Image (tube, rainbow, N blue to C red):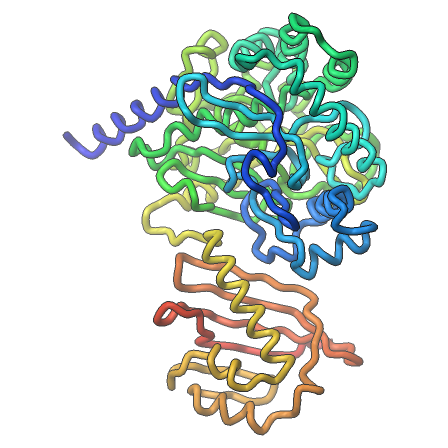
Length: 519
Protein backbone atom coordinates (compact mmCIF):
# COMPACT_ATOMS: atom_id res chain seq x y z
CA UNK A 1 0.00 0.00 0.00
CA UNK A 2 1.08 3.57 -0.63
CA UNK A 3 1.81 5.96 2.22
CA UNK A 4 -1.36 7.90 1.38
CA UNK A 5 -3.50 4.78 1.64
CA UNK A 6 -1.90 3.82 4.95
CA UNK A 7 -2.47 7.31 6.30
CA UNK A 8 -6.13 7.27 5.22
CA UNK A 9 -6.60 3.88 6.91
CA UNK A 10 -5.00 5.16 10.10
CA UNK A 11 -7.25 8.23 10.13
CA UNK A 12 -10.35 6.11 9.60
CA UNK A 13 -9.30 3.76 12.41
CA UNK A 14 -8.69 6.73 14.72
CA UNK A 15 -12.09 8.22 13.88
CA UNK A 16 -13.84 4.94 14.61
CA UNK A 17 -12.21 5.00 18.05
CA UNK A 18 -13.53 8.53 18.57
CA UNK A 19 -17.05 7.51 17.53
CA UNK A 20 -16.99 4.53 19.92
CA UNK A 21 -16.63 6.69 23.04
CA UNK A 22 -19.81 7.10 25.12
CA UNK A 23 -19.13 9.99 27.52
CA UNK A 24 -21.07 9.76 30.78
CA UNK A 25 -21.16 12.24 33.67
CA UNK A 26 -20.42 9.81 36.48
CA UNK A 27 -19.79 11.93 39.56
CA UNK A 28 -18.33 14.93 41.36
CA UNK A 29 -14.90 14.62 42.97
CA UNK A 30 -12.23 17.04 44.19
CA UNK A 31 -9.05 17.60 42.21
CA UNK A 32 -7.10 16.03 45.08
CA UNK A 33 -9.21 12.88 44.79
CA UNK A 34 -9.29 12.81 40.99
CA UNK A 35 -5.67 13.49 40.04
CA UNK A 36 -3.80 13.66 43.36
CA UNK A 37 -3.34 17.44 43.18
CA UNK A 38 -1.26 18.45 46.18
CA UNK A 39 -0.67 21.47 48.36
CA UNK A 40 0.61 24.62 46.64
CA UNK A 41 -0.18 23.18 43.19
CA UNK A 42 -2.71 24.75 40.82
CA UNK A 43 -3.95 23.83 37.35
CA UNK A 44 -4.56 26.36 34.57
CA UNK A 45 -5.82 26.29 30.99
CA UNK A 46 -3.61 26.14 27.94
CA UNK A 47 0.04 25.24 27.37
CA UNK A 48 2.68 25.76 30.08
CA UNK A 49 3.77 29.34 30.62
CA UNK A 50 7.16 30.25 29.16
CA UNK A 51 7.90 31.69 32.60
CA UNK A 52 5.78 29.88 35.21
CA UNK A 53 6.13 32.68 37.75
CA UNK A 54 4.84 35.28 35.28
CA UNK A 55 1.40 34.01 34.24
CA UNK A 56 -1.15 36.10 32.37
CA UNK A 57 -3.00 38.58 34.59
CA UNK A 58 -6.43 36.85 34.50
CA UNK A 59 -4.92 33.51 35.51
CA UNK A 60 -2.84 35.21 38.19
CA UNK A 61 -6.00 36.79 39.60
CA UNK A 62 -7.83 33.46 39.68
CA UNK A 63 -4.82 31.67 41.12
CA UNK A 64 -4.60 34.24 43.93
CA UNK A 65 -8.26 33.64 44.78
CA UNK A 66 -7.56 29.91 44.94
CA UNK A 67 -4.65 30.46 47.33
CA UNK A 68 -6.87 32.44 49.70
CA UNK A 69 -9.72 29.92 49.34
CA UNK A 70 -7.38 27.03 50.19
CA UNK A 71 -6.03 28.87 53.24
CA UNK A 72 -2.51 29.15 51.84
CA UNK A 73 -2.60 32.96 52.04
CA UNK A 74 -4.46 35.44 54.20
CA UNK A 75 -5.13 37.97 51.47
CA UNK A 76 -4.84 38.43 47.70
CA UNK A 77 -1.60 40.44 47.94
CA UNK A 78 0.13 37.67 49.87
CA UNK A 79 -1.31 35.11 47.47
CA UNK A 80 0.09 36.90 44.42
CA UNK A 81 3.51 37.04 46.04
CA UNK A 82 3.44 33.27 46.65
CA UNK A 83 2.74 32.69 42.96
CA UNK A 84 5.24 35.22 41.62
CA UNK A 85 8.09 33.89 43.76
CA UNK A 86 7.35 30.27 42.84
CA UNK A 87 6.09 28.96 46.17
CA UNK A 88 2.81 28.06 44.46
CA UNK A 89 3.29 26.12 41.23
CA UNK A 90 1.14 26.39 38.12
CA UNK A 91 0.68 23.38 35.83
CA UNK A 92 -1.30 22.91 32.58
CA UNK A 93 -4.56 21.16 33.46
CA UNK A 94 -4.56 18.99 30.34
CA UNK A 95 -1.43 17.21 31.53
CA UNK A 96 -3.71 15.79 34.25
CA UNK A 97 -6.59 15.00 31.82
CA UNK A 98 -8.45 18.02 33.21
CA UNK A 99 -9.91 20.76 31.02
CA UNK A 100 -10.82 24.12 32.53
CA UNK A 101 -12.72 27.06 31.01
CA UNK A 102 -11.30 30.55 30.40
CA UNK A 103 -9.16 31.76 33.34
CA UNK A 104 -10.56 29.27 35.87
CA UNK A 105 -7.81 27.83 38.06
CA UNK A 106 -8.18 24.50 39.85
CA UNK A 107 -6.88 23.90 43.37
CA UNK A 108 -6.85 20.65 45.39
CA UNK A 109 -10.31 21.17 46.94
CA UNK A 110 -11.96 22.25 43.65
CA UNK A 111 -14.97 20.03 42.80
CA UNK A 112 -14.70 18.53 39.33
CA UNK A 113 -17.26 16.84 37.15
CA UNK A 114 -15.96 13.39 36.26
CA UNK A 115 -16.74 12.10 32.76
CA UNK A 116 -16.07 8.46 31.90
CA UNK A 117 -16.32 6.35 28.77
CA UNK A 118 -19.17 3.86 29.24
CA UNK A 119 -17.51 1.65 26.60
CA UNK A 120 -13.98 1.74 28.00
CA UNK A 121 -11.76 2.72 30.90
CA UNK A 122 -11.05 6.35 29.99
CA UNK A 123 -12.00 9.23 32.26
CA UNK A 124 -11.33 12.95 32.51
CA UNK A 125 -12.51 15.95 34.49
CA UNK A 126 -13.63 19.56 34.25
CA UNK A 127 -14.77 22.33 36.57
CA UNK A 128 -18.12 22.03 38.37
CA UNK A 129 -20.00 25.24 37.52
CA UNK A 130 -21.33 27.34 40.38
CA UNK A 131 -24.29 29.04 38.75
CA UNK A 132 -24.65 32.74 38.03
CA UNK A 133 -22.86 35.66 39.67
CA UNK A 134 -19.12 36.26 40.21
CA UNK A 135 -17.08 33.46 38.65
CA UNK A 136 -13.48 32.32 38.98
CA UNK A 137 -13.39 31.64 35.24
CA UNK A 138 -13.68 35.38 34.52
CA UNK A 139 -10.15 36.05 35.80
CA UNK A 140 -10.63 39.05 38.09
CA UNK A 141 -9.59 39.32 41.72
CA UNK A 142 -13.16 39.97 42.86
CA UNK A 143 -13.44 39.00 46.57
CA UNK A 144 -17.08 38.10 45.94
CA UNK A 145 -15.81 35.05 44.05
CA UNK A 146 -14.57 33.59 47.34
CA UNK A 147 -18.12 33.35 48.67
CA UNK A 148 -19.16 31.68 45.42
CA UNK A 149 -16.35 29.14 45.79
CA UNK A 150 -17.46 28.30 49.33
CA UNK A 151 -21.03 27.78 48.12
CA UNK A 152 -19.77 25.56 45.30
CA UNK A 153 -17.56 23.43 47.53
CA UNK A 154 -19.73 23.15 50.63
CA UNK A 155 -23.21 22.93 49.16
CA UNK A 156 -23.38 22.53 45.40
CA UNK A 157 -20.83 19.73 45.05
CA UNK A 158 -22.58 17.71 47.74
CA UNK A 159 -26.02 18.28 46.22
CA UNK A 160 -24.96 17.27 42.71
CA UNK A 161 -23.11 14.25 44.02
CA UNK A 162 -26.27 13.05 45.74
CA UNK A 163 -28.71 13.61 42.87
CA UNK A 164 -26.73 12.03 40.02
CA UNK A 165 -28.12 8.64 38.95
CA UNK A 166 -25.94 5.70 39.97
CA UNK A 167 -25.28 4.87 36.31
CA UNK A 168 -24.50 8.50 35.46
CA UNK A 169 -25.89 10.68 32.69
CA UNK A 170 -25.00 10.13 29.05
CA UNK A 171 -23.89 13.38 27.46
CA UNK A 172 -24.30 12.78 23.72
CA UNK A 173 -28.14 12.70 23.94
CA UNK A 174 -28.02 16.02 25.81
CA UNK A 175 -25.72 17.48 23.13
CA UNK A 176 -28.14 16.32 20.44
CA UNK A 177 -30.99 18.02 22.29
CA UNK A 178 -28.94 21.21 22.48
CA UNK A 179 -28.20 21.17 18.75
CA UNK A 180 -31.91 20.68 18.04
CA UNK A 181 -32.56 23.79 20.14
CA UNK A 182 -30.00 25.83 18.14
CA UNK A 183 -26.94 25.42 20.38
CA UNK A 184 -23.43 25.30 18.97
CA UNK A 185 -22.35 23.60 22.25
CA UNK A 186 -19.76 26.27 23.04
CA UNK A 187 -20.96 29.86 22.78
CA UNK A 188 -24.46 28.60 23.55
CA UNK A 189 -25.46 25.47 25.52
CA UNK A 190 -28.84 26.57 26.87
CA UNK A 191 -30.76 23.80 25.11
CA UNK A 192 -28.37 21.13 26.36
CA UNK A 193 -28.48 22.58 29.89
CA UNK A 194 -32.29 22.47 29.84
CA UNK A 195 -32.14 18.85 28.69
CA UNK A 196 -29.80 18.12 31.61
CA UNK A 197 -32.25 19.74 34.01
CA UNK A 198 -35.06 17.57 32.61
CA UNK A 199 -32.90 14.47 33.02
CA UNK A 200 -31.98 15.31 36.61
CA UNK A 201 -35.60 16.16 37.41
CA UNK A 202 -36.35 12.46 37.09
CA UNK A 203 -34.54 12.15 40.43
CA UNK A 204 -35.35 13.84 43.74
CA UNK A 205 -33.77 17.14 42.69
CA UNK A 206 -32.56 19.53 45.45
CA UNK A 207 -33.90 23.07 45.02
CA UNK A 208 -30.39 24.58 44.88
CA UNK A 209 -29.45 22.29 41.97
CA UNK A 210 -32.53 23.29 40.00
CA UNK A 211 -31.86 26.96 40.75
CA UNK A 212 -28.26 26.76 39.52
CA UNK A 213 -29.23 24.98 36.30
CA UNK A 214 -32.00 27.49 35.60
CA UNK A 215 -29.71 30.47 36.22
CA UNK A 216 -26.67 29.18 34.32
CA UNK A 217 -27.44 28.39 30.66
CA UNK A 218 -23.76 27.51 30.09
CA UNK A 219 -23.77 24.84 32.81
CA UNK A 220 -23.42 22.12 30.17
CA UNK A 221 -20.23 23.69 28.76
CA UNK A 222 -17.59 22.10 31.08
CA UNK A 223 -19.34 18.74 30.79
CA UNK A 224 -19.08 18.93 27.01
CA UNK A 225 -15.47 20.10 27.24
CA UNK A 226 -14.64 16.93 29.16
CA UNK A 227 -16.66 14.81 26.72
CA UNK A 228 -14.82 16.23 23.70
CA UNK A 229 -11.45 15.77 25.44
CA UNK A 230 -12.35 12.14 26.14
CA UNK A 231 -13.54 11.48 22.58
CA UNK A 232 -10.56 13.10 20.82
CA UNK A 233 -8.12 11.41 23.18
CA UNK A 234 -9.35 8.06 21.86
CA UNK A 235 -7.45 8.72 18.60
CA UNK A 236 -4.07 8.42 20.34
CA UNK A 237 -2.03 5.44 19.21
CA UNK A 238 -3.91 4.86 15.95
CA UNK A 239 -1.24 6.30 13.66
CA UNK A 240 -3.28 9.39 12.75
CA UNK A 241 -0.54 11.62 14.08
CA UNK A 242 -1.87 14.92 12.70
CA UNK A 243 -5.32 14.87 14.34
CA UNK A 244 -5.76 17.71 16.85
CA UNK A 245 -6.77 16.54 20.34
CA UNK A 246 -6.37 19.84 22.21
CA UNK A 247 -6.67 23.53 21.31
CA UNK A 248 -6.32 26.07 24.12
CA UNK A 249 -4.72 29.27 25.38
CA UNK A 250 -3.17 30.56 28.58
CA UNK A 251 -3.58 34.28 27.89
CA UNK A 252 -0.11 34.51 26.36
CA UNK A 253 0.24 31.58 23.98
CA UNK A 254 -2.17 29.32 22.15
CA UNK A 255 -1.25 25.66 21.87
CA UNK A 256 -2.40 22.49 20.18
CA UNK A 257 -1.69 18.87 21.01
CA UNK A 258 -1.67 16.21 18.31
CA UNK A 259 -2.65 12.56 18.47
CA UNK A 260 0.84 11.45 17.46
CA UNK A 261 2.56 13.32 20.32
CA UNK A 262 -0.09 13.96 23.00
CA UNK A 263 2.39 15.14 25.64
CA UNK A 264 3.88 17.81 23.36
CA UNK A 265 2.53 21.31 22.86
CA UNK A 266 2.89 23.24 19.62
CA UNK A 267 2.54 26.92 20.45
CA UNK A 268 2.30 30.38 18.94
CA UNK A 269 1.55 33.82 20.35
CA UNK A 270 -2.17 33.86 21.13
CA UNK A 271 -4.57 36.12 19.27
CA UNK A 272 -7.31 38.15 20.96
CA UNK A 273 -10.99 37.23 20.58
CA UNK A 274 -13.38 39.93 19.45
CA UNK A 275 -17.13 40.28 19.53
CA UNK A 276 -20.13 42.05 21.07
CA UNK A 277 -19.40 43.62 24.46
CA UNK A 278 -21.48 43.80 27.60
CA UNK A 279 -20.67 47.50 27.91
CA UNK A 280 -18.98 50.10 25.75
CA UNK A 281 -15.26 50.66 26.18
CA UNK A 282 -11.85 50.02 24.71
CA UNK A 283 -10.55 47.63 27.38
CA UNK A 284 -8.18 45.16 25.74
CA UNK A 285 -9.40 41.60 25.64
CA UNK A 286 -6.92 39.02 26.88
CA UNK A 287 -5.33 36.79 24.23
CA UNK A 288 -6.98 33.38 23.94
CA UNK A 289 -7.76 31.83 27.31
CA UNK A 290 -9.21 28.45 28.23
CA UNK A 291 -9.25 24.79 27.27
CA UNK A 292 -12.72 25.01 25.71
CA UNK A 293 -11.22 25.15 22.20
CA UNK A 294 -11.30 21.34 22.42
CA UNK A 295 -15.01 21.70 21.60
CA UNK A 296 -14.23 23.59 18.38
CA UNK A 297 -11.46 21.08 17.55
CA UNK A 298 -14.11 18.35 17.83
CA UNK A 299 -16.27 20.11 15.22
CA UNK A 300 -18.66 22.03 17.46
CA UNK A 301 -18.55 25.66 18.61
CA UNK A 302 -17.55 27.97 15.76
CA UNK A 303 -17.23 24.97 13.44
CA UNK A 304 -20.97 24.40 13.99
CA UNK A 305 -22.10 27.91 13.10
CA UNK A 306 -23.30 26.69 9.75
CA UNK A 307 -25.92 24.84 11.82
CA UNK A 308 -26.35 27.35 14.67
CA UNK A 309 -27.46 30.18 12.39
CA UNK A 310 -28.60 32.55 15.15
CA UNK A 311 -25.16 32.58 16.75
CA UNK A 312 -23.45 32.99 13.37
CA UNK A 313 -25.68 35.98 12.61
CA UNK A 314 -24.91 37.56 15.98
CA UNK A 315 -21.15 37.12 15.45
CA UNK A 316 -21.10 38.01 11.76
CA UNK A 317 -19.58 41.52 12.22
CA UNK A 318 -16.52 39.90 13.77
CA UNK A 319 -16.07 37.04 11.31
CA UNK A 320 -13.42 37.18 8.57
CA UNK A 321 -14.63 38.80 5.32
CA UNK A 322 -16.50 36.34 3.19
CA UNK A 323 -16.55 33.72 5.97
CA UNK A 324 -18.47 30.57 5.22
CA UNK A 325 -18.67 27.38 7.28
CA UNK A 326 -15.62 25.46 6.10
CA UNK A 327 -15.22 21.90 7.24
CA UNK A 328 -12.66 20.76 4.68
CA UNK A 329 -10.07 20.21 7.43
CA UNK A 330 -12.41 17.93 9.43
CA UNK A 331 -11.85 14.34 8.32
CA UNK A 332 -14.90 12.48 9.60
CA UNK A 333 -18.55 12.61 10.61
CA UNK A 334 -19.68 11.32 13.98
CA UNK A 335 -22.79 9.15 13.44
CA UNK A 336 -24.53 10.83 16.39
CA UNK A 337 -24.22 14.26 14.74
CA UNK A 338 -24.44 13.45 11.04
CA UNK A 339 -28.05 14.64 10.97
CA UNK A 340 -26.88 18.14 11.90
CA UNK A 341 -24.36 18.27 9.05
CA UNK A 342 -21.43 18.44 11.47
CA UNK A 343 -18.00 16.91 11.00
CA UNK A 344 -15.14 16.02 13.35
CA UNK A 345 -11.47 15.02 13.32
CA UNK A 346 -9.51 18.25 12.86
CA UNK A 347 -6.49 17.53 10.64
CA UNK A 348 -3.63 19.93 11.46
CA UNK A 349 -2.00 19.44 8.05
CA UNK A 350 -5.21 20.42 6.26
CA UNK A 351 -5.94 23.28 8.70
CA UNK A 352 -2.56 24.84 7.94
CA UNK A 353 -3.55 25.13 4.29
CA UNK A 354 -6.91 26.85 4.85
CA UNK A 355 -7.37 30.49 3.86
CA UNK A 356 -9.49 30.76 7.01
CA UNK A 357 -8.24 28.27 9.60
CA UNK A 358 -10.51 26.99 12.39
CA UNK A 359 -12.23 29.58 14.57
CA UNK A 360 -12.84 29.27 18.31
CA UNK A 361 -15.99 30.53 20.01
CA UNK A 362 -14.57 32.25 23.07
CA UNK A 363 -15.65 34.79 25.68
CA UNK A 364 -13.58 37.96 26.08
CA UNK A 365 -11.88 38.71 29.41
CA UNK A 366 -10.07 41.84 30.54
CA UNK A 367 -6.37 41.40 29.77
CA UNK A 368 -5.43 43.29 32.96
CA UNK A 369 -7.33 40.81 35.15
CA UNK A 370 -9.49 43.53 36.69
CA UNK A 371 -12.87 43.86 34.92
CA UNK A 372 -13.49 40.18 34.25
CA UNK A 373 -15.98 39.30 31.53
CA UNK A 374 -16.16 41.78 28.64
CA UNK A 375 -18.50 39.85 26.34
CA UNK A 376 -18.73 36.87 24.03
CA UNK A 377 -16.36 36.62 21.09
CA UNK A 378 -14.67 34.64 18.38
CA UNK A 379 -10.94 33.99 18.11
CA UNK A 380 -9.07 33.40 14.85
CA UNK A 381 -6.31 30.84 14.96
CA UNK A 382 -2.95 31.19 13.20
CA UNK A 383 -2.41 28.81 10.24
CA UNK A 384 1.25 28.56 11.28
CA UNK A 385 0.14 26.96 14.56
CA UNK A 386 -1.12 23.91 12.68
CA UNK A 387 1.84 23.87 10.28
CA UNK A 388 4.19 23.30 13.22
CA UNK A 389 3.05 19.71 13.36
CA UNK A 390 5.45 18.75 10.57
CA UNK A 391 8.02 16.11 11.37
CA UNK A 392 10.91 18.48 10.70
CA UNK A 393 9.76 21.13 13.19
CA UNK A 394 11.39 21.07 16.65
CA UNK A 395 8.91 21.03 19.47
CA UNK A 396 8.65 24.46 21.09
CA UNK A 397 8.42 24.64 24.90
CA UNK A 398 8.02 20.94 25.62
CA UNK A 399 6.79 21.03 29.24
CA UNK A 400 9.54 18.94 30.86
CA UNK A 401 12.30 20.64 28.87
CA UNK A 402 10.87 24.05 29.78
CA UNK A 403 10.90 23.16 33.48
CA UNK A 404 14.55 22.08 33.27
CA UNK A 405 15.64 25.19 31.40
CA UNK A 406 13.80 27.54 33.77
CA UNK A 407 15.58 25.86 36.66
CA UNK A 408 18.93 26.44 34.96
CA UNK A 409 18.08 30.11 34.36
CA UNK A 410 17.10 30.45 38.03
CA UNK A 411 20.41 28.85 39.05
CA UNK A 412 22.31 31.35 36.91
CA UNK A 413 20.49 34.35 38.37
CA UNK A 414 21.24 33.26 41.94
CA UNK A 415 24.88 32.59 41.11
CA UNK A 416 25.29 35.94 39.35
CA UNK A 417 23.73 38.15 42.02
CA UNK A 418 25.54 36.22 44.74
CA UNK A 419 28.85 36.27 42.82
CA UNK A 420 29.23 32.50 43.21
CA UNK A 421 32.12 32.10 40.80
CA UNK A 422 32.40 28.31 40.70
CA UNK A 423 28.69 28.00 39.90
CA UNK A 424 28.95 30.63 37.16
CA UNK A 425 31.93 28.79 35.67
CA UNK A 426 29.92 25.55 35.72
CA UNK A 427 26.93 27.06 33.93
CA UNK A 428 29.00 28.33 30.98
CA UNK A 429 30.08 25.78 28.38
CA UNK A 430 33.73 24.94 29.02
CA UNK A 431 34.91 25.53 25.47
CA UNK A 432 37.04 28.00 23.50
CA UNK A 433 33.92 28.50 21.32
CA UNK A 434 31.90 30.05 24.19
CA UNK A 435 31.50 33.82 23.99
CA UNK A 436 30.14 36.62 26.13
CA UNK A 437 29.57 40.19 24.95
CA UNK A 438 29.22 42.51 27.93
CA UNK A 439 28.45 46.20 28.23
CA UNK A 440 32.06 47.07 27.50
CA UNK A 441 33.93 43.80 26.94
CA UNK A 442 34.09 41.11 24.26
CA UNK A 443 35.11 37.75 25.72
CA UNK A 444 35.95 34.69 23.64
CA UNK A 445 36.37 31.29 25.27
CA UNK A 446 35.53 29.93 28.71
CA UNK A 447 38.97 30.85 30.10
CA UNK A 448 38.57 34.54 29.20
CA UNK A 449 35.09 34.66 30.73
CA UNK A 450 36.35 32.99 33.92
CA UNK A 451 39.27 35.44 34.22
CA UNK A 452 36.95 38.43 33.73
CA UNK A 453 34.67 37.34 36.54
CA UNK A 454 37.56 37.13 38.99
CA UNK A 455 38.56 40.76 38.53
CA UNK A 456 35.03 42.12 38.33
CA UNK A 457 33.30 44.08 41.11
CA UNK A 458 32.04 42.19 44.15
CA UNK A 459 28.48 40.91 44.60
CA UNK A 460 27.33 44.15 46.21
CA UNK A 461 27.40 45.76 42.77
CA UNK A 462 25.77 42.83 40.99
CA UNK A 463 22.32 43.03 42.56
CA UNK A 464 19.52 43.48 40.03
CA UNK A 465 15.78 43.10 39.73
CA UNK A 466 14.39 41.12 36.79
CA UNK A 467 11.53 43.08 35.19
CA UNK A 468 10.78 40.83 32.22
CA UNK A 469 11.78 37.31 31.35
CA UNK A 470 11.20 35.13 28.31
CA UNK A 471 12.38 31.53 27.95
CA UNK A 472 11.79 29.43 24.82
CA UNK A 473 13.01 25.90 24.19
CA UNK A 474 13.37 24.31 20.74
CA UNK A 475 13.41 20.54 20.80
CA UNK A 476 15.19 18.94 23.74
CA UNK A 477 18.65 20.49 23.48
CA UNK A 478 18.47 24.18 22.52
CA UNK A 479 16.88 27.25 24.13
CA UNK A 480 17.09 31.03 24.37
CA UNK A 481 16.54 33.10 27.50
CA UNK A 482 16.05 36.88 27.57
CA UNK A 483 15.55 39.26 30.47
CA UNK A 484 15.16 42.97 31.11
CA UNK A 485 16.66 44.04 34.44
CA UNK A 486 17.34 47.08 36.57
CA UNK A 487 20.00 47.66 39.21
CA UNK A 488 19.12 49.35 42.53
CA UNK A 489 19.34 53.13 42.24
CA UNK A 490 19.93 53.02 38.46
CA UNK A 491 17.20 54.33 36.16
CA UNK A 492 18.39 52.76 32.90
CA UNK A 493 17.39 49.24 31.94
CA UNK A 494 19.68 46.37 31.05
CA UNK A 495 19.05 43.56 28.59
CA UNK A 496 20.52 40.06 28.70
CA UNK A 497 20.28 37.37 26.02
CA UNK A 498 21.59 33.83 26.47
CA UNK A 499 21.75 30.82 24.18
CA UNK A 500 21.59 27.53 26.08
CA UNK A 501 22.53 24.09 24.74
CA UNK A 502 22.28 20.72 26.46
CA UNK A 503 25.85 19.42 26.53
CA UNK A 504 26.51 15.93 27.90
CA UNK A 505 23.07 15.95 29.51
CA UNK A 506 23.42 19.34 31.26
CA UNK A 507 22.23 22.80 30.21
CA UNK A 508 25.08 25.20 29.49
CA UNK A 509 25.31 28.79 28.22
CA UNK A 510 27.17 28.88 24.90
CA UNK A 511 26.67 32.58 24.11
CA UNK A 512 25.60 35.60 26.14
CA UNK A 513 25.10 39.28 25.44
CA UNK A 514 24.47 42.02 28.02
CA UNK A 515 23.77 45.65 27.10
CA UNK A 516 22.14 48.82 28.40
CA UNK A 517 19.04 50.24 26.77
CA UNK A 518 19.50 53.67 25.24
CA UNK A 519 17.53 56.22 27.33
